[in-house]
Length: 620
Ligand SMILES: [Zn+2]
Image (spheres, rainbow, N blue to C red):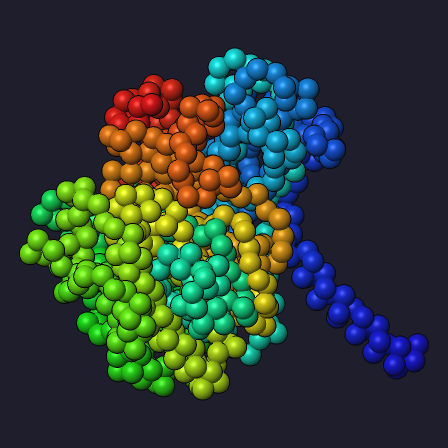
């Protein structure tokens, strides 16, 4: 063979290898269905669902399938496809609840739960494939077992159709994650800028469809990356939302929540030291970490926000002065090493002095010129935010011209903040690191202008929980435009880590959005919301809001994006399904709270538990 043929062969092999690694990033360690078929311990037959035939485990009358000695190793992923046989799709009944538990001795750990209802949900008339982060789920404070048993459990029809043999499990495999990013090709890891613009509702951002040109800088970031137009904050509160971003956990799980009464302005607990934040994970990988947050009571060290930051500055300055005096000097000192920079600008948030939203004159004046009324921010001896809140508590009307003016003042704050976002991006560019920086832009919650009868952000309607979410990293993400997949801020941390090829060091509830960034279709997951005395769940296009005393309501966001018509009586089945989903989730989530890991009742609520929970404020 001639020399150039050998070289060509080597080149083809090398290119092929890289392509293969990119196309098949995972390795199947064990195909549990093939294995069990060989040992004949479970019944396997080929089942066709929605046009796809797969060898599947048939559950039969026993409802449970046990599989022994499943290997566990760092990063292990359990994948499974679940489905309901076509011949029962139109029978009466309520669908099937699929659950998976891991078994170590007497202890059981909840791994997965999914409710499939092909009768009322056409999107369930196919195989549904999920990835379960097996290693992560089993790692809570106990080290990692080398082998576990699995229990696959199905409950068919909460009432009505009890046919259990209709539920089938396929594609049950244990996999090893591949390289999600070929890091060996890079000289150094990318920097990460996580930018939180407090109180920015998505629909006041140009890139998310706003009619005013409030956000040219944010729009420019969005045009070079991917924007998620259906991104949800997990809470309507600064403290809870930000901690969810930095831990990948919902507020119930991370536990850093505002107190009540006299403790209203203090969180009930700091972040537990054994939680692992995004900053800690990156710091452990050699990143220099800097956090700059506005001193709004919440984002302080006492709540645990300093965890993992080499330098964490809580500032009384506005975004312009934060840039000049704190952030830019830090960047000058650290741009030459891989850095994680967390920035929290607070200028959009409502103010407390005179006008409810105040901004530098050059942003405010054009709106003030077009307002001819007498509203000056005060009334009845109080001003600004206090005045708006008093109007709410006394149920006072507020005329449309004034409302429009208040919205304009808010927009002036958005513009002013956007200007500083532009300066920060320009700074990265001037330092020559912009394109080597993964830029993430988000907000912790939106703001309401009497859209649903109130001011500020105390409810969980779309204007309060729908926030901008943008990822930009030109070499990996590219200009992807808009994603309409419903996502949550708990997904931010796993997405950043996935893009960087770093495994999370602790359990996370969010999921990586990298598949969306790669244009893959993955099934949506429900998104959960909390407020004070409020809960909600979004299962697009449906959204359920449960109010402690005020009753519950169901909205179809596709038909009724402004949430004006409660559909709970027209769609009682959907209403019940979402309510149950919310209850089950709250129960499952308590698994993430410390000290409750082994109690089986926590991970698998009985009908009695669910009834009791309903009696405690979830009554219909
Ligand atoms: Zn906030």
